[in-house]
Amino acid sequence: GVPAACPKLYGVLPRPCHALVLLNPQSGSGRALDDFQAVVQPMLAEADIATTVFVTERPHHAHEKVRDEDLSQWDTLVVMSGDGLLFEVVNGLMERPDWKEAMKKPLCILPGGSGNALAASINYYAGYDHVAKKKLLTNCTFILCKGLYTQMDLVSLSTASGKRFFSFLGFGWGFISDVDIDSEKYRWLGSARFTLGTLQCLAKLRVYQGPPRQPGPLPPDSLLVPLGQPVPAHWTVVPEEEFVLVYAIYQSHLGTNLLMAPAARLHDGCIHLFYMKAGISRVTLLKLFLAMSRGTHLDLNCPHLCYVPVRAFRLEPRVAAGIMTVDGEALACEPVQGQVHARLCRDGRSGKEEHDCPPPMASLAHGEEPCI
Amino acid sequence: ASQSAYKRFSELLPKEERENACSARVPKSQILTLPELRANPFQHRICHVFSTSETGDDSMSFEDFLDMLSVFSDSATSDIKSHYAFRIFDFDDDGILDRKDLEQLVNCLTGQGEESRLSSAEMEQLIQNILEESDIDKDGTINLSEFQHVVSRSPDFASSFKIVL
Image 1 (cartoon, each protein chain N blue to C red):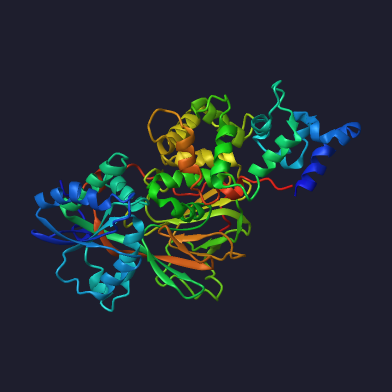
Image 2: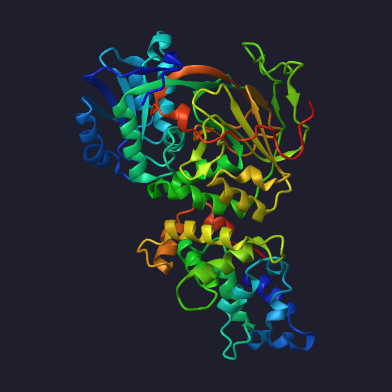
């Protein structure tokens, strides 16, 4: 049943409910529209949710639509695609003059593409077993049918060149980002491309320089100072060294098979910062990725892998090398900083999270502690 | 290009044989002294695949040597490279990549030491992942067409499958 505690944390979709479904027909090896009609629509009809489908024709199409149009007739915006389309929708909404109101509209993700990390995370928070593909789609549709929604943290990312994004999944630099983007060329493979990309990248372990920095515990609001200025004095500066990857993730899953931050929650107010130091062997990296499918990678106590939960971070690469991604989308490589904005967004939940959550992991970084 | 290849090839022969380099065969042990192959985890398989030796000693003639350089050069297509990659990874030469081939492939990449091997559980998981993605007809093995289908679309494959003298 629905927990009585925290009544402000959730709302319920009205019935009957009008949903705008934004769908990329090419996602999921081109099956997204078929899956929507065959699997999703019947379930939604039973739950008294009427849908209008907006099929995107190009990148930015969804971004423009939610930015420019009157959305008042929709009770919820449903994205059926990979995480990239939701990224467009979130950032389109945040560009509206009335973004504060617009962001109160519940958003829903239905996995239609590859890169369904948010759907996998929501499935995990709901206490469902790890599933993929069609079962993941039906689980997420079920959550939408129940109509419960709660608030979700977003992370605001700013770059040296003046770009600003709102992100719901994660920011990466180095190895994993290379996998996100190298995979683009064979996106027809669906989610299979990420594992292949991982094996690919193993053959050429690149090294990136630039230390990430994170603030101390419980910082005040407005956590960031402009990128040109030094970080606030209470921030922790990770000792300068070479990194293979840096990944700041705010959900539990990096991909349907990668439980990167088991302790993460939709609104834990926390960025889970991982960084991996150079010198890690290929086989250790492979072992870490294999363990990540069960979320046990930190148990390997690899001295090259560091984890620390933070509220803000800044990353300044020494050289503009490697690839950066936000929510799986490519970014030019440049200094970036980000901070969490708690509960900025609304997203679906199953109603069982408080009772059925797995136990939280230890949140201390293993291996060397960054100097405090 | 074939000039310097000839020079490199004949340097692998004892001095007295260099005049007849065109018809000589270089033993595998000598081929493996080439810096480009010395650190390559698939050095033995490479020699084996390109050798036309009828005695099975994996020795290479100059023509074998040229074939090898040609396949690893920039001018070879992705299809040609993936065809030879498949043969190189087919450790038991039976025309199919089965679990044993995949295990050997992974062990080659991760190194030979005790510390650097995957546990049998990890190996099993990795092979499962590979098969899940590449084994289209779900017969538990990867044939040439499945291999080419997947690997040759990788944007990096052609550039990493390269040897330049």
